[in-house]
Image 1 (cartoon, rainbow, N blue to C red):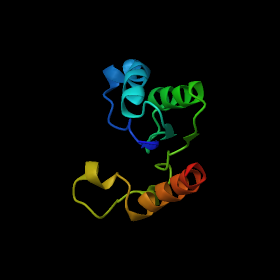
Image 2 (cartoon, rainbow, N blue to C red; image 1 turned 135 degrees about the horizontal axis):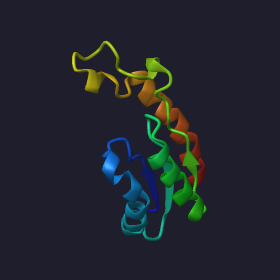
Image 3 (cartoon, helix red, strand yellow; image 1 turned 60 degrees about the vertical axis):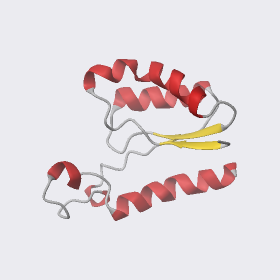
Image 4 (tube, one colour; image 1 turned 120 degrees about the vertical axis):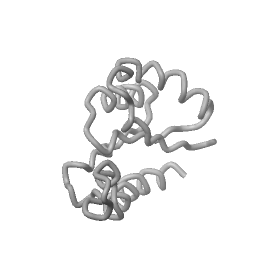
Length: 110
């Protein structure tokens, strides 16, 4: 791939978070050995994982966008699903916000 959009990290178990940067160091060169990666931080704030993503992107001179949109509950699917774990995920507005964040930067890279 010439360009990879990296949107991972939300479901990293607490005990594995200290190893997340090491995982990125293995994963990204495998997935995108010669292209460019566009990163975002997690939808829900997770300082340890978000900081690993930011520092890794910086070490590769690549772009990392702030994808934390959970501070605004209107970005979630609250009230649309009985299961709270599902309802706190991005709803239509949240997905549109993520697209609005990513697409302008991605367009510059194409």
